[in-house]
Length: 267
Image (cartoon, rainbow, N blue to C red):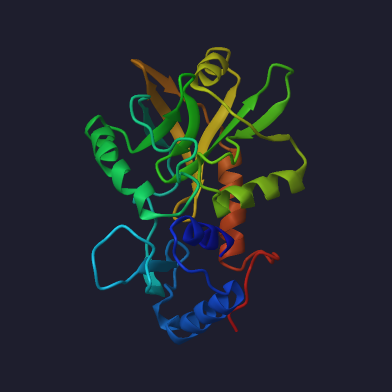
């Protein structure tokens, strides 16, 4: 709700009472509970939406707006299941830039990415790794946040994800994984800028342990390879991978197999 309110403000849309909105969503789910799939590979997708509804065309703050919620039963985000995907990393395409709205959950962040996504599919990839700047900073992967699990130069295991500095969406799943990792206290957890040069170097030195994306729809998605400037970086992944551990833990919380404060009671 906090992210939606920030987006509303950035879009010159009216704000609303977040707690009341959550109550409305809970009531809606109670009413439509029969639409919840009885499956551990499917779920009920909840999409709160806020749009301007002025009966006119123009570039201005709306005088009227509609806040509503869509519910939809969905299957797995990737039909192949929990399997690694390949990425196209082409620095000529940019998803967001400083001072823009890359950190906001709005349609303007998604529509321009569809064409590039289709181009990556024609080249045999499943998603796009979005880069930024002359140093080719990693920002997001498709509509997911990205994580790099690696050995740093000091010989420590380190989980790295780009910082929240306006270029990337503050993903809810991103925050959840960071909190879980910090609770486990088994490796360093760092929010910092990471570039393709660092990834290429770590890959050459066999310090990359795995790379994965994280988002609401897919939860966690491992990366098998990255196509970047004429080279193919094949990303390793062990049988007992961190991405799979994250996926299992998050799924157990989602389906009530693991009690956790994040879970919200509907009744």
